[in-house]
Length: 376
Image 1 (cartoon, helix red, strand yellow):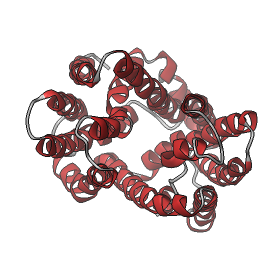
Image 2 (tube, helix red, strand yellow):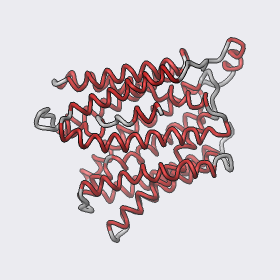
Image 3 (cartoon, rainbow, N blue to C red):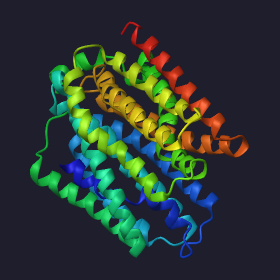
Image 4 (spheres, rainbow, N blue to C red):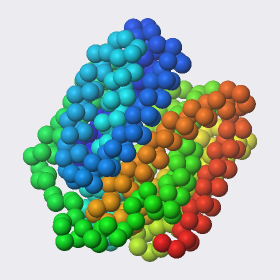
């Protein structure tokens, strides 16, 4: 419920480029792109610190602090009008917001059991996707009225989520006690776990491919398939709707039947095939619809089990480190993937991009499979 309320206010990021390039703000597209680069830089460093603080003081205070302060920073960012201040507060906001993720991932692991852990992460993803869909949809109407409303609603949902957490979820002892310190110290640090570091790098490679779904793919639908904005919005919404309808049921049926890496490999491979489909000649409507369904199926199969994979390598004393590295992989990909792909399209074309993205995702699937066969 806390995640659903928090994510229901997610509306600043989807409309940030439109806000910055509006006549009132006067940013160029290049300057707006630099702002998103700062989002990625802040998220990357915030995830690292969030993981360290989670291991030091526990996931509860980190979540509470980042939710509340993140809400205040949304209000502040909306009041910034000069380029330097917008840059600074954008970095601070993404830094604080992303510090929340390792703590949240650690909390899910703490409150769940091994036999239902993947379902727990799937339920969290369900809340995130429903909140994202609601926030993005409402954000379009609010942006039409006044962009300032986006910052106010996004900040308010952060603070409401923090208040709800304070009153409904009591602090838990998430750190190892003195008696288990020696056992925890005998476990490899996440930064010394070579297999996990390999897993993180492959995850970043895959994430660079996956983020095309929300960045360059809508542009492709508009420029190459000549779809209208409302129809593109419907296609994007289908991703969240399919996840909401199928993910929990599918995860319930699959969890524990095979190794996590098998599902990860299969899902990542399907995502790669879905991007390659965009280069197949045929009816644009059928291709786009099939691609969205297939990429969503790949997402459902891979991402919940990715969380279960890294959690299985952790103990209470180092879980924040593992969560931080995993979050940092996605944060880095959120910046590198879309920016690199945009440059590729500018110098070549979308056909080259989809061949590369599809091929890289399939290559990542092969690397995941090989990593899963390595000894722990």
